[in-house]
Length: 114
View 1 (cartoon, helix red, strand yellow):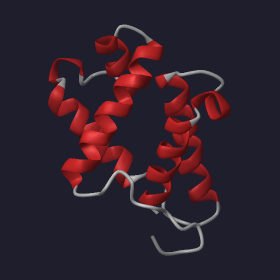
View 2 (cartoon, one colour):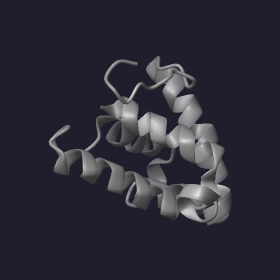
View 3 (cartoon, helix red, strand yellow):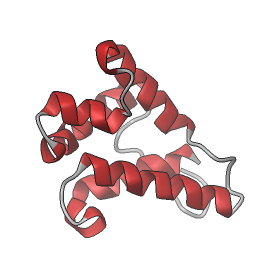
């Protein structure tokens, strides 16, 4: 179900104000945590998201000196602010997805397949 998380990220990137109220890496993290928790509550997958955990680890490899921070705070710290961190997230997420071998424009079918 990590495709769901990737799908939600793409939707938020298209219209951050609609989902988050404004561009914000901190709000994005909270929203994505809510998506993961909803999947857990609906017995869709065990608690946690492999793709978000992998992204966190990927970020820590790039910014090892900040690995004591959560991934969104690493981006806030390096991006110069919360809104800038949101934009940085988009660039890094796309690079992360590309490196993972997942096409960033892969479509998600909520009824099952992708």
